[in-house]
Amino acid sequence: MKTINVNIQRALLSVVLLMTGISLMAQHPHDRMPPDRDKIEAHKIAFITDRLKLTPQEAEKFWPVYNAHFEKMEKERKQFRDDHDLPPEEVLELSDEKAEAFLQESIDHEKSMVKDRIAFMEELKGILPPQKIIVLFGAEQEFKVELMKRVAGHDRPHR
Image (cartoon, rainbow, N blue to C red; front, side, top):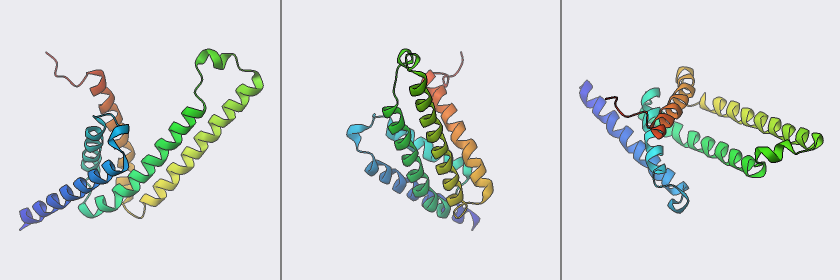
């Protein structure tokens, strides 16, 4: 009987992951995305779901909130980069007043990002137990490190 419940949970989780993947694809038109972006997103979903040991019910509530938060943060980061993209040599040429203004805008941006992250954690409290919220932040970091290693080619077996 226990095996049947585990199989049912796995099937439900697969359906939730599939639906999440479909919603991600609908939110990101393919003409703007690198071809591997879908694979990375699918791997991230599987990675975080596994690390958090999300139940199908948790996954169904968690992923829409997580995706909305992630998209908002990415949009804000991109907007800030686009508005403040100066080569180092130009930054060194700024007057003290302009550099101070630039620095203050950077500080304000960071404060805004922290406020958004706190609001996200508060929202997660209604979805996941606190232990899983704590594990989430480590899992995100682990995923970034794994992704960087893969990009750098360090995921190949040693000879």
